[in-house]
Image (tube, rainbow, N blue to C red; front, side, top):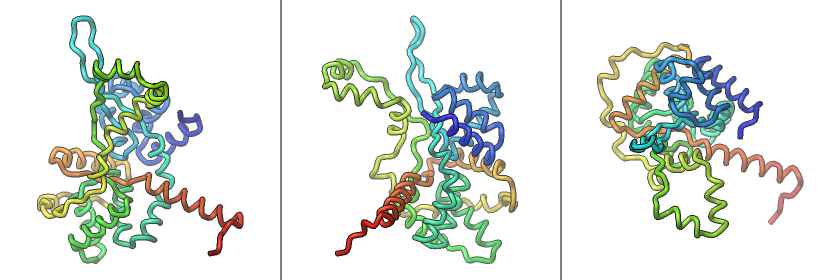
Length: 294
């Protein structure tokens, strides 16, 4: 459960990055909990188009996860599948730590990896082709040399370090418990019952959406070799353009990528939090004079 101060801080961050409209949707989900599209529209009083755009921004930047559940229909009606939207408050608050995350990458992996990583921080989710296009736009105007192989190698280093991971499934389906499972749960141990009750529907959704560990950090060897030449004719993004507009454009590109079944990548916040926690524990250990000499 997010505290009132946490909600206020999260809404402030979303407002600063993406504007009042997106923040209104975010605040609704933070205060009301997981909701379907129709209820979000009723609570926020936004038009369907504006609500869709706001949810796209939040999903693109890993602040909201959609998932589908089966709802029982009225008498005589078949069950229907409803899409629910849950807010991930921790990912919103991680925006404050982006400079620290960037410094860790720069220190451990170098400038090239830092530039790729910065693109993922700015846009939330990107395919390899989108990363290549962005790198072209930033390196060529500045007089740098652009080499696809070098970019791919730097990207692989980020993935191997677990700083970058594959994005979760966009809308996983949470299957209802089967008839065979229900009696088994009733006959199960008391501890199993407690464990099952403690797992919320949001936790189940995140678990189902997460890619399997075998592919979570898997990079294909032929990524980025078929970059479309048409993208070079598109209008370049002006330097200094507001991040709100960048977010909208990035969302549309991500949707196009999903249609082409391209793999989308994002920052692995867990790895950075683990790194920072270990660092704090280490220096706390030293400050108390517990350093052992061997």
